[in-house]
Length: 415
Image (cartoon, rainbow, N blue to C red; front, side, top):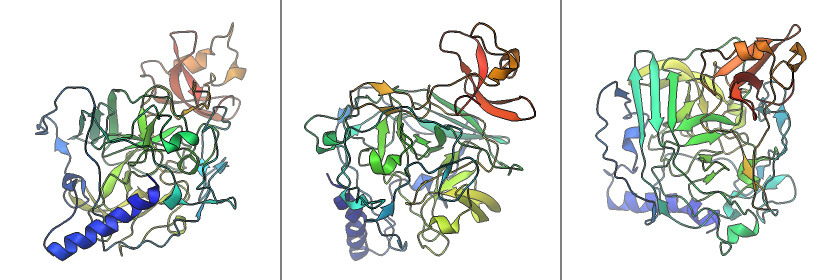
């Protein structure tokens, strides 16, 4: 199905709802809205019954939209974000820890690319299918921590993956990966604070309230993932390890707030990710946000009204988090962040980790002792840093390809 029809469904639905009754509040995820969403306290039951079983093809997703929100961007000419990688915070770019991209991407160029550095969202292909999953996801407040767990399967339907050869999306993107169960275990600061300087992002930047991770804005070739890859009707697709994820805000997470958008999820530094709209209901653009894709003003946060920094999703690249304004507590949730699929059908990793501070003298292919020490008593994926010749190298704890020892490895390849 073309994206064009899906974009008009919210308008049609909202008009029908308004005609039927002015008292009806559209939105299927009321518990996730800015005004009514309340995380569970520790030991408080979620009340959600989870049934085991295999995914089955069923149902469709439609959204009611919000008639009080006003879009200002031209969806037929959105600027491409290909290769907008920066070595420092920069508005409209991704301050990426990864400095090189050596994976593979779609097999062909999409017909929705205009050829002038823009792309047409309304013409973009969407992966067919409507597959339901057994969804598990919870958010619990415990003191100053926000504990998030889940199985990596969404609360909405997905397209059929691997992409079928009969799907029109297959002409462009032959994603061979399946969606599989994952283990989500994430602890974020409930009241994050701004750090002295911004931090680069790895392959993943946060998690949305659908229980699905949001990756940075790039595909495995360093191009605009939203424009070049093909996702399903809820803006998701799986990477090589079966990890279903987004690169943009999912259209299947409804924004039911009137004015300022509702909370949509959390970045890995603990700050909130909100939807497309500002306090007056007008669509937010990059010009309204800082270099990391956020700003500060009064918002609703865990049932309180507070002045707080937060990120926004936009329909302009880089779509969500361009860099972290707080200190990220994890690199990512998948085994290997980022990722894409090769046109040959072979999954490729978005980057290959290298041991940090190689110049400090690793022996026989082993990481230097400083890289090992930085990850003592740390779990895989924990952020780390070591000092190397008057500079600090940031990375994440990971296992070398041919070993069992955790070592600090930079997110962007060799330093």
